[in-house]
Length: 395
Image (tube, rainbow, N blue to C red; front, top):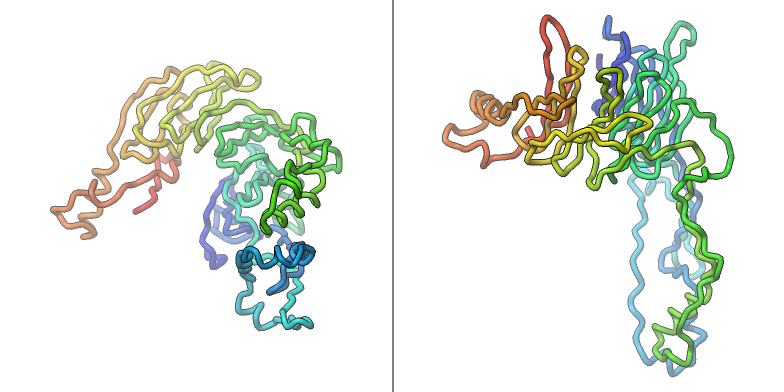
């Protein structure tokens, strides 16, 4: 069913419901009859009110306080041009008025045109909650599935900003913890249910300590002589205590493990009554670590890719099998419990045959010289047999 003009960038299935994210909205679609049930929209953000003046400097005119002979000693650098982000609609509604000096002043309390897009979703096994990641603001949002007037809807019950932008999330089997991996190689655990308060940042948050001493420049009027350096010194003296703009997180979160490379995907696995965390990165590594609370213990690695690993898949019917793909041409099947490689398939050969059938490549053209492929997703489904669905970029 066609619901909106934006393409769907993320899908999640929970029971007989399909959650489809398009931009900053999530559509709930019934899998049984493909009907659209409802839509959840992310609240739009507003920019802070500001005033921008053309041909006006925001910094104090210290130059006017200098002696006359120093004003002409060295030409000042040209002022930086500032571009005002006014589109056609904003230009039509422009109510700016010129100042006395002929310059224009724009006062704006503008609603952002693009709210953060939803990039990742994960659902609980009990079918009650959906966790969604908005990439631009690095926020994990927990949505509850509620029923109002016999219509199922999504209601946001919490949102938490992570230290770094999450690139993959998953939810533990007991539906109590969200595991989040970011592109700086860190994996965090946060509770699924969280009551937002105005409390102070958590003691484990990565906030910077403010300096207790004000900034004091080392130079003085006796050591500098040029006009430009005098202006710099005057601006430095007006600086107060340097405060960090990065606030610490005010919710419980625990660092589980880390990679030295950018993380790309994360999966939770179970074998012999033990839990494991499987992570992949851009350095061709697939790491198998123990589950909480022993995530610092590495069981083994699955090594065999020659390019970055972008996606992992564990079939529900075969929990000891791991399927991986990435920037190389191979789809590899592993026994992740031992780290052994079971089989590999060169997908470039299949892509070459398909493209030649569609007359997209000349018969004498080498597929390797034409383009490269990269795995964007790997999914498992079961009909009469296990089926693996793989999607590729650059095709």
